[in-house]
Length: 207
Length: 119
Image 1: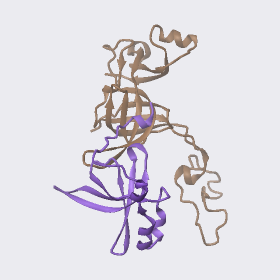
Image 2: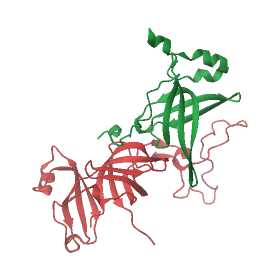
Image 3: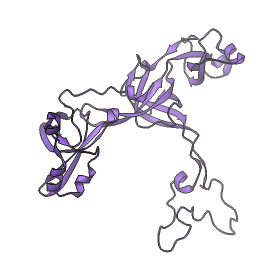
Image 4: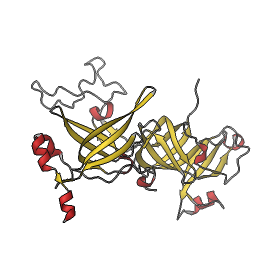
């Protein structure tokens, strides 16, 4: 069984539940995806399927060669599948994979924040705002001891590049899945900007 | 696909058109544990926020000398009925300035719209 899809973030909105409370949801254009390659234990050492998503107008010749007679697709992503014996090349999956109430993990590229300080990047508290402080409001504070160890320890949290990174949000509730419109609504936020590419997988059930 | 087309907002037939400055009466479903009852809130519309599924409006009234404002989601299933009590004529879309006025002044500011419509 293929347990995931490739999608595109449409944006956020809200829906009312039957009780009248509001749920914030993210709308995702999910699938349909076609299987473009099947990876097997015998050949690749693990079993997975490669799915394609989005219509491509132009592809270079290696990409066309890889897809063969299949429809030209813009994006390829791999999904691990335990048993690939009953899956054919070109097999299509759509959003009917998910039912309302299911839990999904969504992976995407987070919005880039540029070079960010410690307050934004690691939730440092910053310095006092008053009592004669100057230039210390968003300072990181001490980054270690003195002569011993005489260096800054590896992994010390500091300012640096933030965002534009592959991020997964786990266990989001599926609110609606409409195969006619290839529309998926999940509760809560999802990484990345609008029109960003997303991988949606069923959450693994843990004991 | 466009975000505005994603969620269909079920238009409540019982909600007539109203504008900022109108005085309206809202009947609201309240769920208390098992019981369900209705509550009414009457006040002047001081703002309307049109934004698809998240559209809302705010009512203001003066109760026992204290200003009370309450915001309702326009598409909430808990909203039973909306009744326009009085049509007002105002020159602004957001009537935040009513907060600074005494209730007498506020009433004068929100004139009746009926006269204009006769003309």
